[in-house]
Structure formats: structure tokens, C-alpha cells
Length: 172
Figure (cartoon, rainbow, N blue to C red):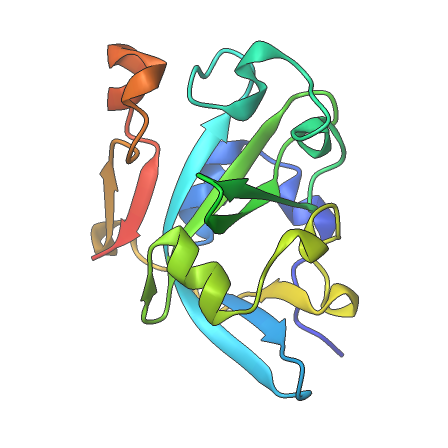
């Protein structure tokens, strides 16, 4: 039996999910059948239509439509035409929010993470579940004292307020 988190675990406030993912294992069934487990050490929260850094701040589009759907699904998009970025949809349906997985194991940076785990647009819209080949398993709770909270990276376009909210979580 899998220890994979259920979709309902992600149907909670985005900041709680982003913080609590720190220390959990991102698991991937690789093409050769082996399982790669990397401990999540960096996340960023993108919390709804008011968050000017959130892709949904300008409304629903074909690219971000998954963010308006049920929690516990992947939102994978191409950044700068180069790197796939992996997000997990959170919260209730019709409230567009997600957590960007920025780092796990030795893969520091969201593009390095998806490359290391062979993640691409193929995972977009899939559930966070072992059956999809990409899932999250609990790995013990990390103490608050072991987590650093900072502003997100690379979102100056969102304006001073949104560029400075502490929605980034890192394992110290």
C-alpha cells in the first residue's frame, strides 16, 4: 500500500501546503521502473487571483485552467521556453492556487528538479498519485525552526507588495 498523500491533503490553504511539503519525498517512477525519491527542500506558494505573481491573477486561460480545478493535480508549464516547472494545485475548486516545487534533494532550482526527475508537459493535469508515476509521500514533519520563510524569487513584475510577501519556504 502506498504512503502517497491523497488529493484531499492538498485541498487546504496554499501556504499551509507549501510549508508542510518541506521534508516530504517527491517520488517518480522512472522509465526503467526504478523509483527516485527526493526530499522536497524548497517551495513557493501562489495563492489565488489577488496574488499578482499567480498565473491566475489575470483570469482563466487554457494554460492555467488546471489551477481552477480540484486540488491534488499537477500544473506543469514551460518557463522561458526552456524549463518545465512543476506545481501542485491546492485549495478548493474555482480558487486558483498552487505550490511550485523549487527544489528537492540535490536538484536546487525548479528547472533542475524537473530535469532530474524527467518531468515534462506529460504530467500536466495528472493527479498527485502513485498511479500517475509522480507522487508525494510523507517523511516526517519538519520543525518550524528548521524552515526559512522568504520572498519568492523572480517575480518583480508582480509589484513591490507581491514581490516581498514571504511565500517561499526553504529547509535550513
